[in-house]
Amino acid sequence: MPALDKAKVYRDFGRAVNMAPAELEEWLESEESRKVGWKADGRSESIGHASGRRIVDLLRTQKADLTDDDYAHMRKVAGYVARHSAQRPENIVTSRWRYSLMNWGHDPLKE
Image (tube, rainbow, N blue to C red):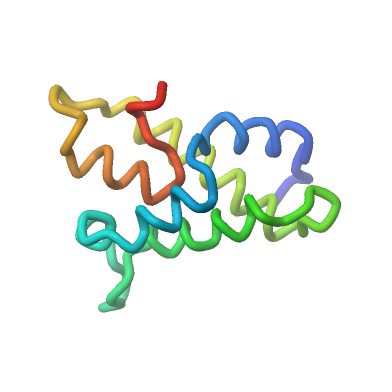
């Protein structure tokens, strides 16, 4: 993997994630949050839900303490939000599309 431009990744992540840590934590506890997303290899938790828990940790980590692995995940989050946002459905308020994005820390109703 080529070297990450950490400043760009940090900026992109900051733009993509528009939910506060406590707000995201509360969302991840909801039934709607647990119902959406792809579950790999028979796991009970979706990829996005697990990512949401990691995003909460990243948001609470000082920038100086972020690791290369953290930056790689932040880049993954920004990419997912960008790709998924482009698939906007007619009804966004109660859509699985919105709920999936919210698992990744992005609430499209805040745009």
